Amino acid sequence: MEKLALILGNKNYSSWSMRAWLALKRTGADFAETVIPLRRPETKQAISAHSPSGLVPVLRHGDVVVWDSLAISEYLAELFPEAGLWPEDPGARAEARAVSAEMHAGFAALRRALPMNVRARLSAKGRNGDVDSDIRRISGIWETCLDRHGGEFLFGPFTIADAMFAPVVSRFRTYRVDLPRTCRDYADAVWDTPEMRDWTAAAETEPHAIPDLDGP
Ligand SMILES: N[C@@H](CCC(=O)N[C@@H](CS)C(=O)NCC(=O)O)C(=O)O
Image (cartoon, rainbow, N blue to C red; front, side):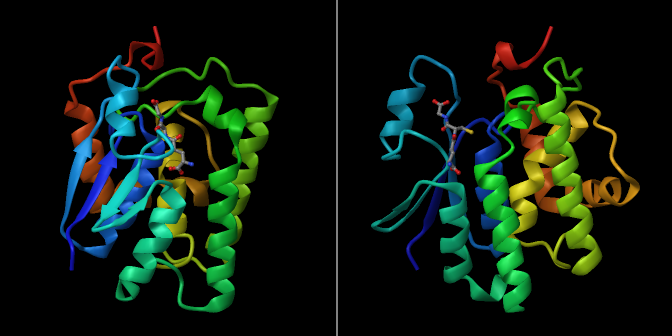
């Protein structure tokens, strides 16, 4: 098989990159990774050398180029069926796709007010009613999935749906968001996966800071 290469933004700040990277790690496949620091003078040109949309993450696999986190995850699920990246049951799989799509397309208020910053602990300055309603909806999704399908993760074993919500898990830690008990346990389980630990360890020591996102 051609070697897989994933092009990412900073591990500390790039929430979309985290999703694709976690999905790829779960396949167990060998891959090369390139981190492009975001918000620097050379960023745009560096990303455009790989990505038709000018955004990361991008997966390259021979002639195939996939430049969106959810599309990358779908591609990996097809390439590595044995990795169980989606639930086996068609109904559960449809639900996992629905919550993943909801995360992919939604929660703009939360994203704006609580940007991902893995290594920081900050106060949530821009938290308002819209952010609270995003937090309630996300907690509701987690509770419903855990109740209907869960073991440790939303659909039992770790799937793409968990990778899609992993940056939210990090945001909730950074901004010390209070959660119902079940959601707290779920968030801890995601945070404690070996893949997430690898990612957060790399984020801790990454040299490139974005001062605007680091708070006062
Ligand atoms: N829908 C895209 C969104 C990707 C995205 O917005 N990526 C951000 C980084 S997290 C980016 O590339 N920004 C370009 C820049 O900051 O120059 C996906 O799911 O991959």
